[in-house]
Image (cartoon, rainbow, N blue to C red; front, side):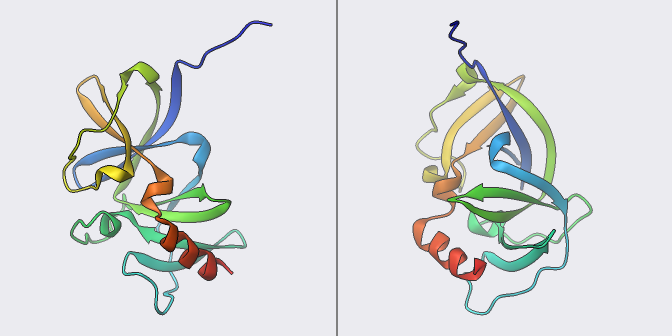
Amino acid sequence: MIEQKEHTQKVIVFQIQDEEYTLPVQTVGSIERMVPITRVPGAQPFVKGVINLRGVVTPVIDLRERFGFEPFPETEQTRIITVTVADMNVGLIVDAANDVLDLENDAVEPPPEVVGTVEADYIQGVANVEGRLFILLNLEKVLAEEDVLHLERMHG
């Protein structure tokens, strides 16, 4: 049996403010245009509410607010990226979803101590590819445990 090592990973590239972030393509369910979001009382400020996505009630988080950035008006480019975290579907509001990219594993470096205003805990690594800097997000850290428990209660 021939052992095959993966040298690249497929990632979804999306934008928040002026930065480009990535998520592994296998964690992404879909990329949706903005739809009306039903508010949920008592949720964290970055939890915008829930949407009904093809019969599945999905909590929605504004990543811009989660990272402490200024709120930004919705545009034609605003998207909801649905991801699966801890066996639960969650929607992430991003400024734009740009493309799918094959990222060389050896291009990924550990995160620097401080990266802009995004907490370093949220970052799995950074990659510099052809002059573009990509920040690889760690979804489990983006959704801290207490937030996930709160979302699970919303999720039903």
